Length: 159
Image (cartoon, rainbow, N blue to C red; front, side):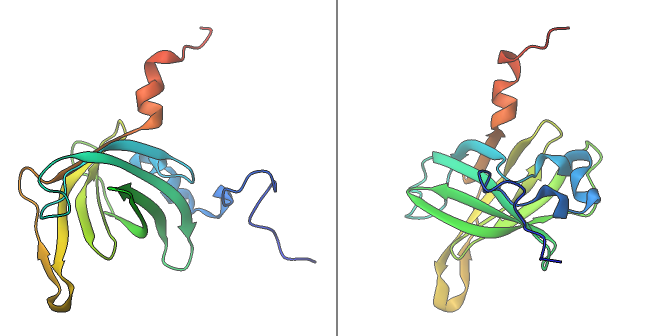
């Protein structure tokens, strides 16, 4: 028997969602699925961000079975990087779920709310040779809304 293809349809380049464990498809975790996109703003501490907000894009790429994490892309200031998304084991009392992700230069720690809004604080690697990170203060943040949330009011069912 030939090996099963990860793609159901060659016209659709997204990974097979059936490979994702069922626990990752429930509750607030259900927001994460291949192709899901968030758009918002990020304020990176230090010279890169210059203490001003920039357009920010966050997208789920695929489920990594080996690490049991989502691979995500995040981009700002013309720089896009891939990283592993780490999710807390259990939701907070308000239903939000803690999350974190880090690339070679930027670290984000925050949460996703039940309505799909990602928010948190941002740190920036300042001196890689010393593994020295500049932590974000109140002004260094990330906030992104899922595309579905933004469009919610525009689509109505026939009910």
